[in-house]
Amino acid sequence: MEQVAGDVGSFQVKVRKKARYVNENLCTGCGACAEKCPTMVVDVFNAGLGNRKAIYKYFPQGIPSVFTIDATACRQLGQGKKCGVCAKVCQAGAIDYEQKDTTVELDVGAVVLATGYEVFDPSVIPEYGYDRIANVVTALEFERLLSASGPTAGHLDRPSELALEREIEEAQKELKKLQRQVSQLEEKHGKPSSEIVRQFQSGGLGESEDLRKWALLAQDLSALDGRFQSMTHRKASASAARKLAFIQCVGSRDFRFNRFCSSYCCMHSVKEAMIAHEHDNGVSSSIFCMDLRAVGRGFEEYKLRGGKQANIRYVRGRVAEITEDEAQNPVIWYESTVSRQVVHETFDLVVLATACVPSAGTSDLARLLRLELDENGFFKTDPLAPLNTSRPGVFVCGCAQGPMDIPESVAQASSAAARAAEIVAPARQAVG
Ligand SMILES: Cc1cc2nc3c(=O)[nH]c(=O)nc-3n(C[C@H](O)[C@H](O)[C@H](O)COP(=O)(O)OP(=O)(O)OC[C@H]3O[C@@H](n4cnc5c(N)ncnc54)[C@H](O)[C@@H]3O)c2cc1C
Ligand code: SF4
Ligand code: SF4
Image 1 (spheres, rainbow, N blue to C red):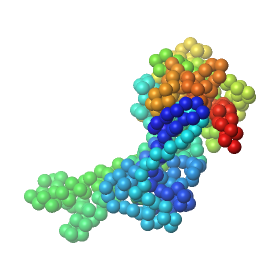
Image 2 (image 1 turned 90 degrees about the vertical axis):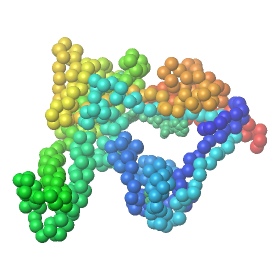
Image 3 (image 1 turned 90 degrees about the horizontal axis):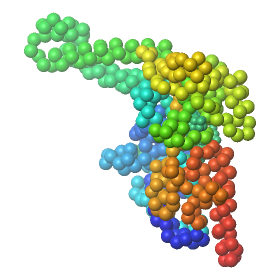
Image 4 (image 1 turned 120 degrees about the vertical axis):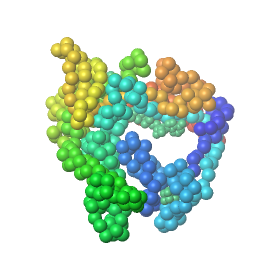
């Protein structure tokens, strides 16, 4: 949304529609373009844990089910190089490199804001080691690891092992390159590299720059091969994460960051621990919390079922620090309120239940629409009419007005649509 004029019953709104460089009326969603695109990009939807192509669908179930080119990553659009592969393979002729952003002008009676939330960035809590300890992840990242359409197809590989896999891939490419260069030199000189390296190390190689470079290349190859062997050995002995810890209220109920309770994270931790156990019955989970807020119909029973059937242990205690051992296992330090002692425990993976915070554009949107925000930065609503913003005709639903779970967001969305219809329907009847 770029511009808003008018008032309740008659707003004139300008919305920018970003170019997707794919004609959405022609694209059949077949995916041939993405299959052949040579450019790999970090996948934001998979929380940076996997890669996607420069031409992509944001997520598999996205509607409309058509592709988009990420212009900055694309060789042709963003990097000034020649490519055009997607246009060549698209049988529907849907690729349009000339497409531009357009402005859509709308005459509307009411506006509903449903811009949601973002997750709190836990790297501002240094004692939890997120960004420093590979096997400390956010709950959102954990959801992607658990998902069948995620980067590990639902297998609970630890991020440290995923990084190792990437290192092995890179090392393999470099090994091939070095092996090719060394073989060419061996063929050219008719000698094995071992002989040259021996002469180089004993100082008997003479002045030849060419032979010196060969010896150094052969030494690099041998060092990289050693590193490659040790990495593949480590990878072979790696196992999936089975001992999980969930830390609640990360950035919530914490006066340094957000005073409020994010309301849904206690239940999503129980859910994630249950799903992890369904995937692999050997999984056990410990949920560290000040108290577990199971507020909702059937929620307390669900929590208890997790304890009885899914190997979940609920630990009352605020985690003070996370450290890491030599095997990249996170170690949790906390005060047990039962034994009144500071204790530590090692896990395979730690999941941080991060707070729900206002989405990035909230204050800009509030300025544009002349709306008030509440003390936490969400759209302010009327306590007696909870979908009303501070401006008549503009409604807000879901996490744009504060943390809430999906059922509540959906119920609010229906109510907001009904409130908007109350404004629009009489005008329609008058026209009809
Ligand atoms: C790890 C995790 C697990 C969860 N699991 C559960 C669960 O199992 N069950 C449950 O009930 N709840 C769960 N929740 C909570 C759930 O995510 C929220 O309740 C729900 O997403 C809120 O829906 P929403 O539509 O208000 O916001 P969102 O889902 O955030 O949707 C808002 C949309 O608006 C878009 N947007 C933002 N700004 C603009 C703009 N300016 N213009 C256009 N579009 C914009 C965003 O890109 C986004 O697509 C979980 C939350 C987390 C973090
Ligand atoms: S033109 Fe861009 S999107 Fe298309 S195949 Fe090449 S890099 Fe990928
Ligand atoms: S829902 Fe649970 S984890 Fe989330 S802020 Fe509230 S108490 Fe903390």
